[in-house]
Amino acid sequence: MLSVLALVVPLAFAGAVSPVMLTEQTVLLAGRDGRRVAGCYAIGVGGTSLAILSVLVLFGRSIALPEEPSLSASLDIALGSLLLLVAAVLRYRRPRTPKPSKSRAYGLSPVQALGFGVFSMATNFTTLAVMVPAAKEIAASDLTVPARLVLTCIVAVVTALPAWLPIAMTLVAPDPTHRALQSLADFIEARGRWVTVLLLVAVGLFLVVRGIVRVFGG
Image 1: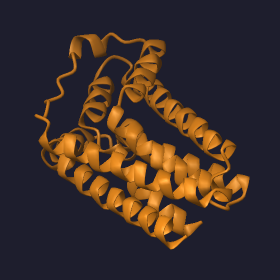
Image 2: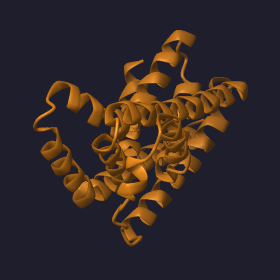
Image 3: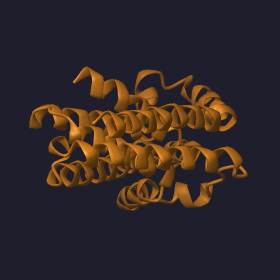
C-alpha cells in the first residue's frame, strides 16, 4: 500500500495546485454566511472528486489491469505521455490571473455554492488529467477493496485541498486567516505552475520509463 501511496499522493498534490479554486473559496468565505456557503462549495468539490475517482477506479478494475501486464505497461506509457503533454501545455500556456466576481460570489446560496463546487471540479482539466493515472495505480494494485477505498478517499481529499483548507484555517485561527490565505494564494499564483509542472514531469517520466521496462522486460 505504501508504494502505491507514494505515487498517488504526489499526483494528488499536483492536482490540488489550483489558484482559481483557492481564490473562489477565499471570496466565498468573505461573503454573506461565508462558512456555510464555503462549506457547501467544498462538499461539491470533494464529492465530485471522489465520484470521478471512484468511477475511474471501478473502470480500471473492470478491465482487470493486474492480470494484464502488457496492458498495464501500455497504459503506463500512455498516461505518462499524457502527463508530460499536460506539463508542456502548463509550461508554455500564458497564465491567467483568476478574478472571480465578488458580487456574484457574495450572493450565492448554499445550494448554488454546492453546484458551483461541482462545476469547478468537473471543469478543472489539469486535476482531471492527474486523476486518471492516480486511479489507474489504485485499480491496478493488489490491495484489498477497503485499502483501495482508503486510497481513493485520500486522493479525493488531497485534490480538494483548495476547497476545504481555507475553512479549516478559519476554524483554527480566524484572525490571521485572511493574511495567510492571501499569502498562500500569492505563492500558488507565483510558483504553483512550476510546482505542478515539476510534479507532472517527474511522475510522467516515471510512468513512461516503468512502462518501457515492463514492455521490453516481459
